Image 1 (tube, helix red, strand yellow):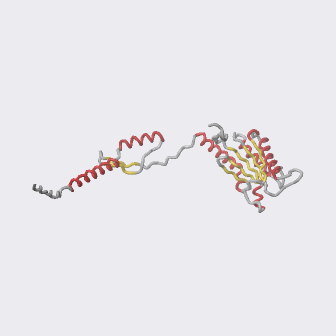
Image 2 (cartoon, rainbow, N blue to C red):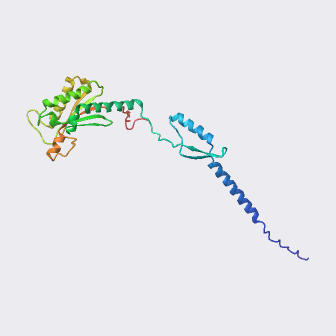
Image 3 (tube, rainbow, N blue to C red):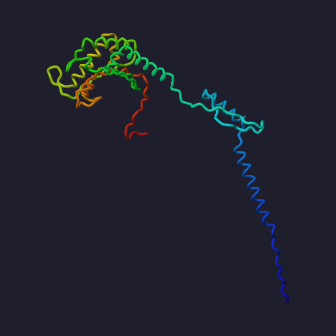
Length: 258
């Protein structure tokens, strides 16, 4: 039996066109998708901008140029202003009120502030009036000097029409004191604070608002190794406590059922 002769098929030189056509189709699809992503619908953008404007009460546009294919032109947008959260109204009013108290205090004590004998500061805790003890008392004494009474009465005049709590703190240097009146600096600082508090009450400030505390030599504001530093540490601080609310956090009992 004769073998069938195998006929070899000739090479097809056009097969590359199939792969090339597939590649071009995928490339076209890729650019269509990219164009769809990059195109911006100006109408929808304006609806979003108006919605955000109504929610935040401010313009919500961005800086740039947006192409409009329908109008064959571009829309220039204004920059977005920075959006800052507004503090709650009661919080804002309380801060403004405390600032007003600080300005009133500065107004009546301006000469002493300029001389460096009184310092007025404002923090989230309240307004603090730091008075050098040399202005109020003699060395190792708790009786007010005659010239200091007028300054304290001026402070009381501002505070008696206010409703904030007042904390009076007495501080001393670290040199020990021991006599028949004051066994230590703790007693001296406590009596000095009480003396200032009593003058406030006698000047019309509600005593229910006042607290007197003796701090002794702790919390110095300067080094106690020099006479100047010890003089700065002998002071009385009057703090008008802010009414800014604190959120209470309940502390759970360890091992309690949850």
